[in-house]
Image (tube, rainbow, N blue to C red; front, top):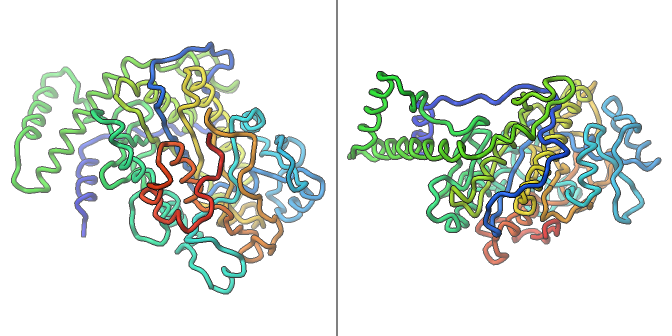
Length: 470
């Protein structure tokens, strides 16, 4: 049966035209390095979380690579045809550890620089867990594991809900917004804004995601047209929406349409006062350097709109915002070396430029950006690619991040070793998505006493605060 939410969502979508995301795959820069400092008015206690979801399962094993002689030799032998050459790896300056050293993929030089400058952190071997798990328990079947491991759709939902052992489809970002929405009292726009359409992460019991496009608000096509036939058509729409209806579905449908029209009008008027920041956007040497409106890659175009919306937070009456952006293409079963590099290059430029742009606006400390993905990929390769695995490594960046460190432990990178589920290099997570998310939620303002309302399973794990946020 169609649920009430599904009915409303499907019916609403039928009345709107969605703007498609740009498909340009080139590596592009957002902000000019010589960007002069400027600030915008904002509340000092304003905070925003930005989730960038890497759909398909990003291979974290080729994001962070051993660079010590013994470690790299073992890496190259285990990874085979997907091993990266040691030349070009971007070294990480790490505190004293276990004797191993690491570098980032050659396509991540700016992220390495941000990490070494203490403005970004890495959280190692994160994944969906029902509870703490060891290899012995996994292989003996003595502990619960998330259902449908290695399934794209299921692991995406479990990452976004952080409740793998429940069919509940309410996201932890939605529950976080439910708890925090009083801070945005009087704001007409949802706290949860998506640049990547519908998702589970932002679905709450009271708060739902508000989709916008990289161009701005998504409204009824030609609603603001001045042509007489169109004006007459939408005058009729307003009349229909303004009436009362006895059937609950009919009434809720017109309520949703009415709010959408009102929110669209508001957001369009607000964004009209916010700069496009075109003067801060420069293209790569391969396309349109110096143009006023360069074509942006899919990540950059989403982050630019997020920056514009963050710039308008005071006008919109928001003290808390949660954003969702995404990029696909990480399901690299074949031709991984040629496909992952350009994606990581887009990630590198877009994330660092976004962070620097926020710093120039005086808001870097108020915004925390973090990555998520279905899962990682097997350490062992298959004829040019890799297969679905489990624990993965993720970036967190922002002015409030205690950067320059790897949080958690890098797994034993041995096929069949202590952290491998079997023999192909699928790492059992050492950190749960609950612990990762709880650390971000605490920074957002959730007290330890209320954390279980956002993350119901957090009590099963020993590290509700991983320490990467100040």
